[in-house]
Image (cartoon, rainbow, N blue to C red):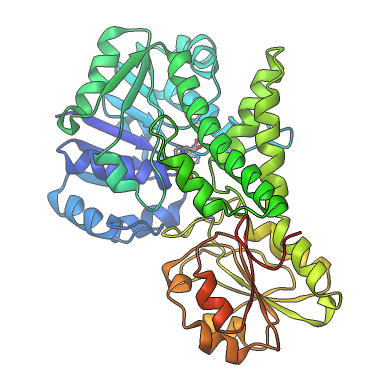
Length: 433
Ligand SMILES: NC(=O)c1ccc[n+]([C@@H]2O[C@H](COP(=O)([O-])OP(=O)(O)OC[C@H]3O[C@@H](n4cnc5c(N)ncnc54)[C@H](O)[C@@H]3O)[C@@H](O)[C@H]2O)c1
């Protein structure tokens, strides 16, 4: 069993750490955020992820996982294999911000006292590994092998995805380093793709770009359905049953959000441009996605010329159900646009983390959000909203209220019979025409 260090205990690093410990490796998880480390040492997870609390408790009890901050002395923190799982957010120009990755790489190169395999879990643009090796790791006093091992987990299903991953991708120049990393996952039995570093980096971006393309494609078809009177539910089912296409990522709505697709598509577009290539398809995918999240505001403003006198309930703040992550959530664009139209906005989410909502209020129950509202916008398809007693909701709201189902997740017939005006994306509803 290997001695592993994971640097960065966010959504990716923490899952990587506890799962590696669970399959038997000795793991140290390191983070600069002292509060996170204190929580983890106390056995509490700083993020919401199904099954994580139990796995954390189990691995802490086994003694195979510990938590530390870099101030405790890097030399004691390095195992033989060091995963880097720090954030790579978007810069103002659309490029991936690699400052956290570079800072970690510089620390490793300066402070490593024994040979290491550094494994990049963070999503970094093609070419990053080569640059880090040439400019940073080449200066280290000890041998450092570099491996790219991109992460494909879905928040909300992260632990299941770790154990049942469709593939493990490993990019390395040295075969022995690739084999060392592959061995960590040997108990999973998943297909392993071993390739060079640049190809592994590209696989990650190409995967996210392709999934984003599927979403923007079905959203374009849904918008067309609204123009021509077709039903996107039937169209998507009819398309998705074709095995060459597949049914995943064909849910029309207000578009993708989250900490990956938006920034990774923009970063790939940036890297393409930097290399002299115009990735027109990807630019359109991004444009379509930006446009989709305007739809609820456009339709509500049309339906209510006096929107500035009305209250709107925004149901859902996380970018998708089963996570507290609000990064790039469509709701966070929709709320300020509604405020700009003069509406009063009340937001409710069962789990989402703290978020800046301007003049909008965040309430503790869905009923408070709906009370006195003229419209509800479904932005995250939490089960609580799917199962809602919409007749009770109707009774709390003003006359002829609208539900804008931004996720095509609600029962249209039930809402219409409860007395709502129903609007969605590509589904029959009164916004068409
Ligand atoms: N979240 C996802 O679903 C997901 C999926 C696949 C890939 N990724 C990629 O994985 C990477 C991490 O994403 P995340 O969502 O886990 O990010 P995150 O922001 O949740 O976590 C990053 C962590 O790194 C810590 N950190 C920053 N600098 C550090 C340093 N110098 N030393 C130690 N810790 C440091 C931060 O305090 C934070 O806890 C990103 O590149 C992301 O694109 C994310």
